Image (tube, rainbow, N blue to C red; front, side, top):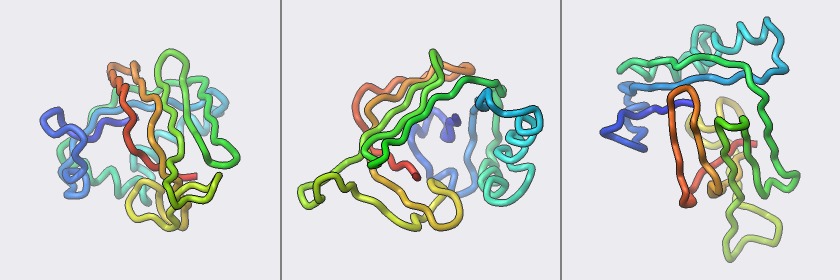
Length: 157
């Protein structure tokens, strides 16, 4: 979970791609992770292991602030037909989305993009299903977000 834009520019990612972003974030690691994984994941996500996460972390020339790393019971779901997906950490984070469809979409088929540009999907061939958020609630590590209206988002699957 990361807030990548300063309060004076909410929702703006141009600072990230210009490598001038500031950020505040924290990390939850699934409670099934062993001690070795618990030590490795912050190094990977924090960019200390290089690769694509290292490149993304270099985009935060304006500075980063970590609110901590905690173990948590993480529940996630991706529908077999990709019609909805979400993740929840009880009492802390809840985010769910449903796939969008249009008047030309065949029944049960959703708009998808293969090999999407940008960091949304990470490196390599990926499949993205486009959707709308139905729930977004964060009250964790000193960060609070509540969005009641639907907004568009994409999720790599």
